[in-house]
Image (cartoon, rainbow, N blue to C red; front, side, top):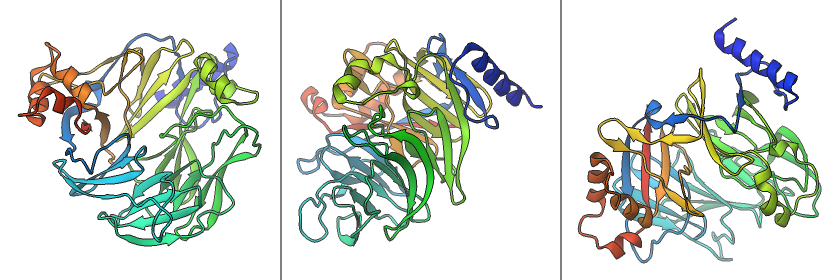
Length: 396
């Protein structure tokens, strides 16, 4: 019996003995997660270097909130959820075009619920208000519309598969609505297909909307990890199977029972340990958590060993560092977004965060040179109000 399996079995036995939530599967790598564990996650353990792309400032191409970034051979495609548009840039960040066709006319969408690109470099936009799927070129030309996409369903999250089909997830939490959550396939014509999982959750649930429930795996398949189930699943042409499992000490959302409402959620979410985001790049699974005490901690799995820590060490070789990309309630945060790149972790940085970094006296010299090269000749006000900079972590 190998070392990993012995460790996994010991965790399952320990969890059962202590009365904690038990592992769901006994045949996948399983790790106990202790929200109170102290330690440091070193970014240098899995990140080789950092590069930056400053997205060009234009009055007709301002960005509000980046949720997804797609990288092709020669393009950077940015999904701006708040502005409901898809922006296309070259690899240097120069603006090329956009898809922004809101309206009620032919080839126009009312709501950009989700947006993707496929291997034919088509932009795909889901309008779940009307259960329609729209296809566009990178220049915004309308190609086709799937008029009835997975009819009579509510799609809360969706992702495209390499074969042109889609995986959909309804984790909804609409007050007063009661029905079962599913994970299911939809083919390229919009026909609902195989149900991959019935999660057993009855609405209203405590589920929170996170952009990382469905994500791209390095091997091209789809990953799935619902917040209320600390299991990572892989979805391929044969179905869905677990590949990594956490057993979290203390209360998690999986313990929640009751009627969901937004007021209760906002006042009580801190009572639970929750997975905030997950990045699976090459052989590494990097996850950000928030504990019952509303404190952040992180885990890093390298395919063999699981590391936990309540601190991140951003330092890299060659006098370089990773930078925080957000700030909330006075706290500096590292919050990656979803990308199709199998070996890249991407975090958008506002001009304010770039200015703050450059104003830090002890900013490592290599990082300073890279940032300064992005804003040469710009005034403080121009930097503070510029479009986001993409910080790209190159994973070994």
